[in-house]
Image (cartoon, rainbow, N blue to C red):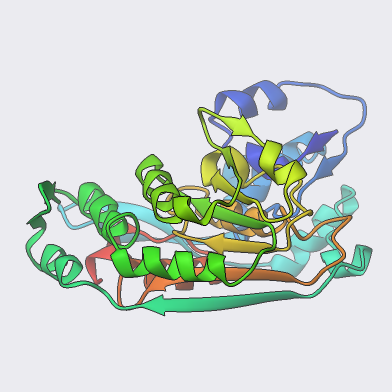
Length: 306
């Protein structure tokens, strides 16, 4: 049995290679997000189910691609759509695949998402225009698309004073348990600093620490979870509210975002679930949220138009 089979969608990863070499007599694959809207992610999973179709044949049969210029004189193949999807579903069914919505299996409480907007700062706008910024003894140099994306996100997160105040206001509005998802260690530091005088107990789940004492024992606790460490696993149904201080971005971000919602919306949850997306309007964050809702991942090409 493989719980969360979407974790082997990258067949070149060590974990995937190890699992795909196994020859089990019977297989059960479980996943809430087996494809995240991307059928190409099924190939490695169906190998375990006994469908020995080659990756090339799978793509030729069901995936639509085209070659596009990447800006430096070379072309790369990108996925633009899918074909013969009904045949694919029938083929999957013949190998035992059953796709069901959570609502068809379990009676779970209602989910409500809310966007809380903040204005972009003059610092953000200056950085996007000039790829450089010096403020408060901090120097940001976006000399390539990766560093520019990174600093643009930080200007919408740890350096955005209005958003930090908005986080504080939201936390002060309730005494319920809260889950807060974040990306960078610096974000955790500034959030804890801003919330420190509220005297709320907190837990932390990240790459260096997993302390759930406050979550388990305090009704008014705040649990800070770094996406990479806790979005894909963990049971936090004692809470029914999630705050997204910043959004995940990059490979696997769609899966992480969708899976993060399920940390509270699961068996044992008796209350309606609320999700608060703190978004800086007119920035990379707004584009990223739109991409995640469409089951896509924000790319360099989309960012260049921000």
